[in-house]
Length: 270
View 1 (cartoon, rainbow, N blue to C red):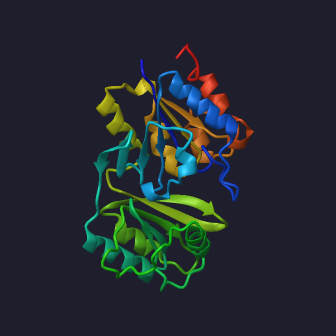
View 2: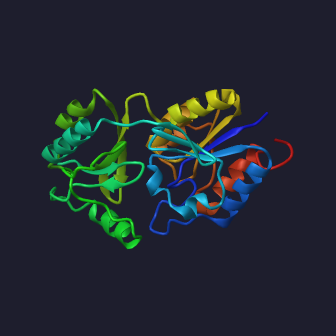
């Protein structure tokens, strides 16, 4: 039986720190898992344009991006979800009014609101500019749009109003502290990392017991609870560890290799 393997990026495939290191043993184990006949997918909250080549270069069969809003298999786009442009602009202005500093993430580009006087996003803006991927800061630009969004808030933010305004069409995820600041992520209603898994299970006709999910944070909970087998990395959140069926070592301590070998996904016994 073919297995479907799904991997979060930050904290799972690469270290969740300034190194962004993809360990060599993890790359080798992934290649071994594919050689053994498994289908390996990245499953990330990142949109497609923010999945850098060094992450995909080790080799994957496809990607589930933007919390299930974009699904790709061997270069073919299988699914796209789009939010109407008028609603995108309305939500961006609600973020400004509520002081919720957001990364407005689209498959092809990421925007932010340069008029919102909050510093938390600036390191991301500078980093992307350095990589040659500038982030436009005008939420009123004619081409402004997004598939999902995430971001930061502080003591001055009106989180309660913000959650009221978005609850009709988004699911709110509290990501806890990211880079020392409160962080949130929003999924369009009906979409999640789990919905991406469900789509591919149905597409390939593969049962849940042949599905493995690897993650580390609170935005991985739905896929951890949905998959037949769930694996949390050693530096994962307490909630993710509680939801997982197996806890392995940290990504830079051989955790991915250990977990793939534990479930016999890298050899002829698969």
